[in-house]
Image (cartoon, rainbow, N blue to C red):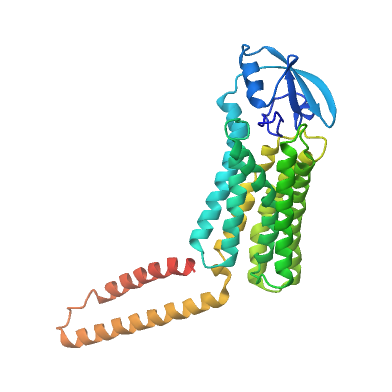
Length: 354
């Protein structure tokens, strides 16, 4: 649970029972004894041996009720299916963002993707400290990053798959999402530390994330149908499989957390999001591959260099054949074949890297 005793929508596959009763409820008493935050709850439960039935008094949506659950050891398996999933998601997104930012630091698409990846990667990593009462700054950082995360999808949609200058009306489209994220961050933090906590701004943040994810996918589809540029279509085709694969599960988890059901652990909704991030990273990294003009220019350079080298080689063979005794150049055809193979091998990776 979080520092104020609120139980987040993160759990194992088979615990706790009756998730709808626990998720986003606040623990206010343990076995009838009032508690103040997660630290006192942990102390009360740890004082009993594992397997002891513990009666929790919960407060949620203005209602107070009791739930009894047996305590259990938090094993490595439990850690991997909760914090481990969040850590995997965060590290994967950070890795893709850093890779693309390093490969193409000069493009606006890569820079925006790098910023988006930092936000998307750091907020789940901060989430693994939410249950620790001794990391108060992690709670603030987590909620701030979670609120900024939706705005980064709008930012990415403005530059991908087509790089557009952020001027005029587009600048307004960029300012509004980040301003809304800032307002939500303030509301979430103020509501979180109230007594009782007010979680409506947090639920609104989940819905905001759903809307911006859908807006990003919609922008891809609209751009695909409106453009005749083959390069842009190829980039969109590279992204859509990951969007379909990861987006559906993530949207279901966010919608479940935003509304009253809250039966799906939110971290499982993030399991496939690295696939979407990888597709976006692939499309941006291969930007130059789809740049036909660049390929033509480089092909012209390679062809010119090949002709020049071939001409020099032919001239050298001619001069040597006239100046040396007969038979001295018996292996000249073999040498020529070897040089041709080496030349081809040198050209192939250079072309692919374009």
